[in-house]
Length: 140
Length: 140
Length: 140
Image (cartoon, rainbow over all chains, first blue to last red; front, side, top):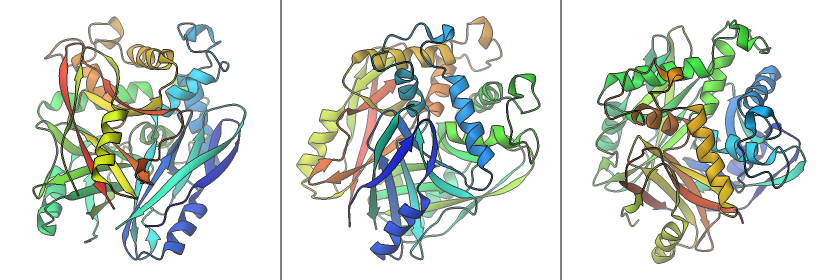
């Protein structure tokens, strides 16, 4: 099965859609039915399948995670030890642990079997821009 | 590999077991060894593998998520913008992000390699009844 | 495809790395390209891909989950009903629900396509020692 790497350029915390890139990868492979597995090669960002209609959903999602896991210079997070790369460092690892590092999406009739409102997202948890790598694997 | 859609009818928030349906799908396929991947085609419900012995575990799980992510008309959630379909709308997306959209379960000796106490659940996050679709994919 | 069971012996809550065992399994199979799916056969521990450089990351991760989901004898958790096996019982199920029961890692050039800092971990949520089973499945 063909293997390559999808890249997503991020500019701070938030959700970045890559549904089109994943769909193009599947289309090119020409597999009638199978399974697309997506794996993100980082521990400070993660993968999400979420609503791609109202952009407020993505903003609210991002906001929830910022409130659940505040930066490590927040008074409530003083217990954090790993602050090496700044206040967004350890919260990024925590948010990644709370979401998914890999997602499997069936392929039916040469297309991703996503629901009507589902989109594939890279969830960036760091403040600074990053070039993120996702390994797509297409199996029978 | 055979592809179909499993449906789960829900009646409000909570866990709905579909282990028997998934097991029947695997049995019918007659594959000796392989991998069953389950993918849910929605962004306001999710998948869980959880204990199928004491029903209190499911009730407590549901309760935890209701407390961690209260309805958007709760004073603590006033920051939520996406309230289009009611106070259970955005919390449903958040709970889905905190759990899993896809799960892979190996098949050994024509059976799901689940642990003794493991069951497969659809975790419904909306209040109203829904007909939920899960795409099972069986690969070698 | 070869199927076996990897075991991880735990001694209380925390992260236990098993990257080497998973890599050895893939190496022995000799598959050039494919997908390794890992599935944990329990509902009170889970799987994580996390940073394997600074051990403080693992300690902080463990700490975050202990604070988000305190033991059921904590005043804030008095609503918990399932306390059968002690105060770490139900929180263990909740922490498992918040993380992952299965993870898919692509294999490229006979090696796991993990990022530079990524390690595979069994996240133990119980206080007492356990012998945990992970089913690795290698597919094309």
